Amino acid sequence: MTGPGENACQRRGVSCGACCGIYNLTLGEDDRSRLIRDRTAEFANVDLTQAGSFASYRQAREAVEAGIPRFNAETYVCPFFGIPRGRDSAGCMVHPSITGNPHSQNFSFYGASICQTYDCPNKERDVNLVYSDYCSRFPEYARLMADTRFFNLLISLPGFLQTLAAALDGDPAERADWLSRLDALANARLLAPESQAVASFEFRRFTNDEEELLDVFGHLNQFDRVRMLDTFRSLG
Ligand code: SF4
Image (cartoon, rainbow, N blue to C red; front, side, top):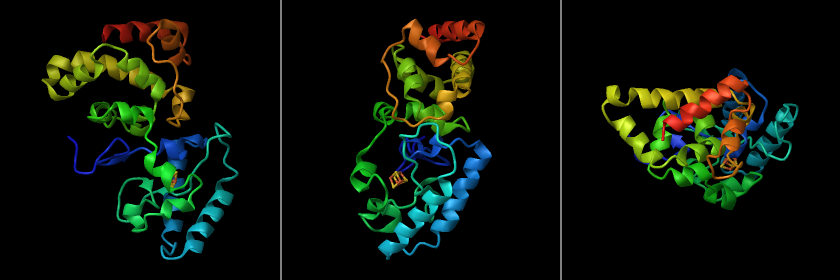
């Protein structure tokens, strides 16, 4: 069910900040949550009417977070990703809908034009939020939603999104087996190091060839990789 104003980045109770770099920090779930709470608490002191206040916050947070190793040194980590004022899930704390200032994202490294126009490939391809609905069943919503390689594979199955929509809406008993096989793939993919450092920018081949599939599950042993290959093929 899609509520008003919901999109793949912001669903009721879950959100994704992969493109803002939050998963580029080598942090476990608890430390990442703590970091987001720290950012949020510090940003509460920012005076939204003072440009210098935004700049000071950014400078201070970048300095504090500089010591946290990155998975990818080229991917920027934006300290404005936290829990926006008046919201209960993470998002952009300087989004114009929060600050009332259409230019407030210009205080960030990317700037308002990039922040407001960038949509990750998965968001663009999941226009009806079917895959987003599926991902929202997982605590790791963002890491599945932003994983372009995994979604590439899934939508290479003919009619995948239609089958998924039917499975989510239909008789649970009828579709339980299909969904449980998809869950097995998703849970296996969440263990991949690539999934833990997801940025939404990786866009590999749009194919379901065996080599790509086995590489997506390259963290598993040979037996389990072949099992995932068979599971994947059984979904088509
Ligand atoms: S300013 Fe841009 S990069 Fe930073 S949190 Fe907001 S949308 Fe993400």
